[in-house]
Length: 327
Length: 300
Image 1: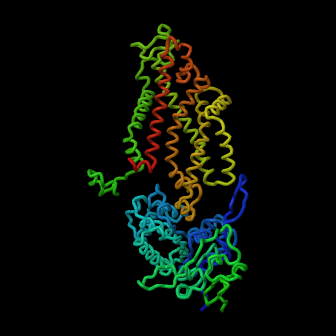
Image 2 (image 1 turned 180 degrees about the vertical axis):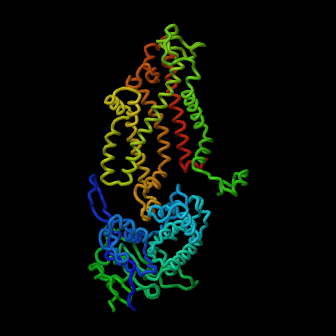
């Protein structure tokens, strides 16, 4: 199968945050939130990026959109490097790449009506104003499962799920092609979660959207994603098509994560891989494989050499010394 | 919403929801605060008497009549007359004009400089912020009234210069206040969202950040008016403010000191006027602080 063209290609992306100390704010170290990740996202697909909290998945999303400036690496969106873009080019790019936030409460300005919040971008980019703007906003509200009379309402008049719909409508109004969904359902009630997931899927179909779906919920990712990437301490440890990932995860960390997903079948006891200890500090990650301190199968080489991402299947990549390179 | 439906008589209005604006909510909470209402009443009296002073008192505040000089309060001059026979009551009424003018305009000057500087400093951060904040540190190192004295010394005495001086002296307070509010507001998700939508910095500050910082600014301004009036009276007392024959309370207080044994009304009443006006603004400020703070609102 010839590899389809990726809409987004990330190579060696790094984001370090300086740790400053003392009176003169000397840089005493770096938190390596994102430490050289590679991603290829195919147009029209959903890439599920999973990992524990603090592993750098949100930072990765923000850096890809250049909401944060990268420390190194490249992000190529439809063949153009986002990292190297000038101010005007970046502004135009914002129409094509959007973000949906985790917290539906803080992500809406309490002093701006819904119509205003969604329509503002249309005006700023000179796409529509006046009654045309209103029409566009009302139609996008309907697409997102809201009503046109919500136009004049304020965020405090909405529930969490409705607010998240507003946030989605705001992201969609510029007709983007690529959307980073940064834990879009983690803050919602379980009953609402499925509604929002279905909405995202419908929208993807309708507008041909490509998602980078950031989540810590493996069962949701299993539902929505086409491809899964697992992050641990700022690095991608396994990157595989969804089916392969859920049926035969190869990295010990992926295996541990998957074994922690509650089973749907009562009485069926999976073999649980229990990880001990905490995630090490990203300011001072362990030498060698960053996972070796918690890995149940770690051997000597793990604490000495940094593993690289190896191709182990037609489209399956793992960074682990214990997994033999194939293909 | 739920809290609205509690008001049973409002049920009919629910069908066509009336806009429950923030302003209306604040007013509703303010109205329930008795002390704030007392403050409002005091201020209303001062403002009305300042506006309608010529209708309330027949005497010109600067007209002299030596036949009544230093007379104690009487039927003709209800608050007495000063050493030149000028009607004390008229002077206090007209003095309210000067005090209110100084209070509001100096706060306007302070806000005009302090709010934008603080907003930019907080929003952009980095070296610019560092630079601005060190300047503010220097200004804050001096007590406000001292700073105002320095400015008046440079600009020269007079009501206009007092306003400018008090305004400048209040700049650091606004800068710090606004910077702090902006710092917390800019971390909110909707600011990140606005940036992701490609909305420019100027628009983000004006439409997304500043509207969410208004509460503290309004509260501070109310208190600041009181402070400005007090500082202005202090400058007047020192002879650096309004010049004779303008009826400025601080100056009246200072001039009246030499007659305090025989004509106490020349110091008592201007002093009380300053006291009540400052009290009025402070009471309202307290009420506003409670009404604008969403946390304290819930408890009432």
